Image 1 (cartoon, rainbow, N blue to C red):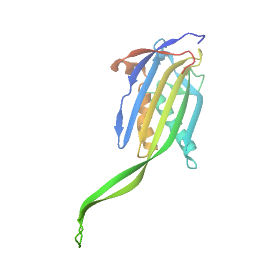
Image 2 (image 1 turned 90 degrees about the vertical axis):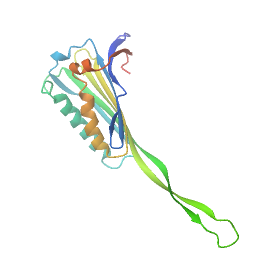
Image 3 (image 1 turned 120 degrees about the vertical axis):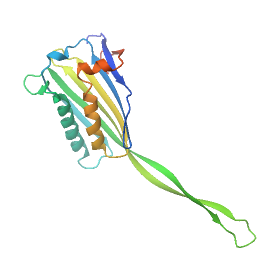
Image 4 (image 1 turned 180 degrees about the horizontal axis):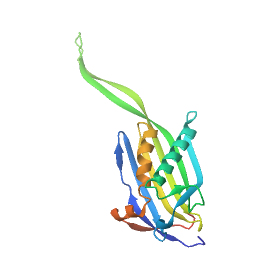
Length: 199
């Protein structure tokens, strides 16, 4: 951006969506100078999916699922279509890591009686189990093809104990629902500066 900074609007910050065993936060930044009403088409501008400690097929499955959910979200309402001479270029970066947590569970207390003159004791058993969480982050950038500037950026972060695919199916449409300018009217806006390097 030639060393200058652009003003973006923070449409929603740290909005928590609680699913079964899932907590998700959303951040949305919109270029207040861009006229989204004239945009009619989009195409992919880049995709990246990284899964730490992946099992075979994880990255391809999650990349395909995320791409489909993003495409479906952009097509909602029928205003922005894929293909043709695109007004917007859309890219995403998905990062997922497995997190294993040791959980100690205490059992019932029982009396260990002594049959001699020694004292009796109260005993409580402790079991340990391992729970697996998925910790993920997704960033979606929407770039004006003509200017090369990012005009919308949506980010979500999630930590889930259940099925990651289900969490993405719920959270990505929720994130993309904030793309349309009318969605900004119902949220508290706060101006922030996005550095010229786009980070």
